[in-house]
Length: 370
Image (cartoon, rainbow, N blue to C red; front, top):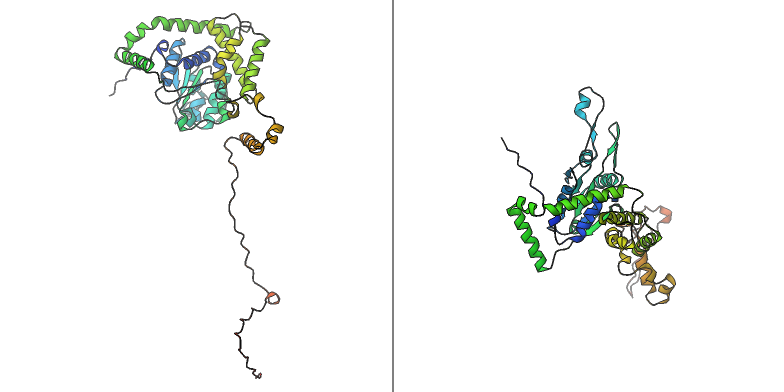
């Protein structure tokens, strides 16, 4: 008989150091889960899982649900309760992981390795707050408001741009190269491992302040009349999205919602352009087109200017290549040898084989027929 082991206590969110952008993105997603979740890119050992678990503890009564890599679509969205149906009762819906994550955090490690169908369902529910199931003779919908946190290691592949765009925020973590900062993080982790309860007690006040700030910020975001903004905010959002060369208007909407969540977190009276600038990188990091990273489209040469210089053809071909569908490969020449088909010749088309030339001085002897 086995004894159930207690779940380990999470590392305090207030004690996470060295990742300020990660902390901000997670807090903004917790303030407004409708942002669409947070995608965290980074190498191993950069506190991705630790931060996600710690965030769930800040939300009152929030569950922390993990989606395993081998999960099926039915286990995620829910399906028919076969036991209830086979017992002779009416059809009944069996909730999935999306229902269990309502009000909490749904964590997906290595989300880039999941099938696209699961990622689509995840992102749909994260953005809308509703899970809709139409399968197995069941038509069911239920509320599923949660904070989606997905992690991925770029060395193991990435997501298609269509899926990346549907994530609200993105944070790219890097290894900490400052020696003093690394030592401070290691000391904090060792102190937590040696005495988890004592370590948490030392950060209990900061944890309580963060939890209370989240409650206040969520109330402000829920109030439609709170946090007004003017044309300057709209102009700043539009200029940043145009400069990044993003497709569609999702980036504009997410940037406005993120700026509103940040203003609510800070307890501001209105949304300002400074709020927009603070959230812009997390909104545009995974949406920015490669050609827009180094210079804005306004500073790019015009087609006529490109054609005037000596490298005009090369520049034009490079720009056209960037507009191709993602994953498309340019055509390559393949050597093909034409082979003529063999057909039998009819007697009328047959030609006499050329006679072998006779050597000089050779005389042909005449022979009478018969």
